[in-house]
Image (cartoon, rainbow, N blue to C red; front, top):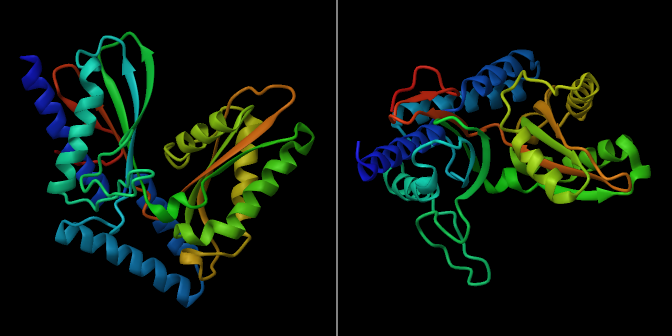
Length: 299
């Protein structure tokens, strides 16, 4: 297959997958929302969950995005060094966003810094943002799409603490942020926490944390226990669905970590709203694909 033809096929595949991610939640999120709805005992909380599932049904029926704020799109790429379109992949992803903006359609969410002008096609300075990782010498690529809405981005924060603050300082920082800003992100929330030695590493790890499927755990048993304790404590805040009180404030807490400098302790926080629009697709060199986040979907 000619390179230009292969590029066009992949561009169209990614544009169609962006469309899917904006209109259908990943399977693990739907399952968790169903679980949380069943555990609520207040009529108001139950009604809110019912409205969420009505919304999901209408999005499927009418072929429209789940939320009017279709977010700013980021791609997290895990590539084999021998993937044949590796050098062209950034351009392919940018063009796929441009196509999806018209075809899906997506709300125009790219505003240029300083000029304060909306580009009207979701393409702007370094947007869509692409995070790169060469993982092996294979010829396949796995791409995670994330649509970050404005409300879900509001609680995003990162800070470097004095090391004496310890893990108690991390807990305080997360809880203070959730109390101050969590309601803006449309609970129940998926909480991503990055712990590292500098703010920028912690921030990116926190975003990677909310890309993990619900039900996965930190590889260190102490980290996995930290996730469970944070989830329990955040749910006890009682913020509930859409911030109107309830038994569950979060869908889960995921922690990603990196070794730190002895003199610094940094924490990053990223939040996914209830409409957690995330998708994972794996593409092979022959342009065949496997969708890992949405069972039964064909593009």
